[in-house]
Image (cartoon, rainbow, N blue to C red):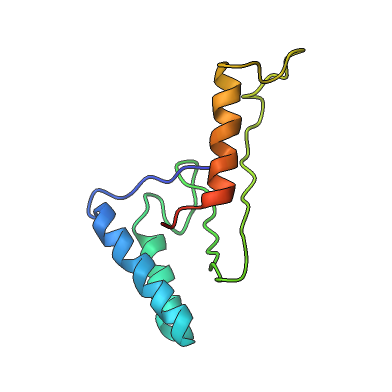
Length: 109
């Protein structure tokens, strides 16, 4: 997964507030408010607009209560498959189990 770098003029709280405003606008069907919140978020990131090497493209995805979103991470060449993949107490085992918990429980309750 790509990472973003927040401009020093903004805090994580600023970003979170825009996320909540976008969620509210989406729920209420207010496209103008949703577009505004998304634009505000894009402007909070370093190199926003040009998407220079510091920041990748930003795509907004809106969750729905009747949909489970499974985001498959981009891992590149960070994982090397072993003959005995996921042995007990191996770091790969922990990473795989964590991914499973994220899919099952999400980031809600």
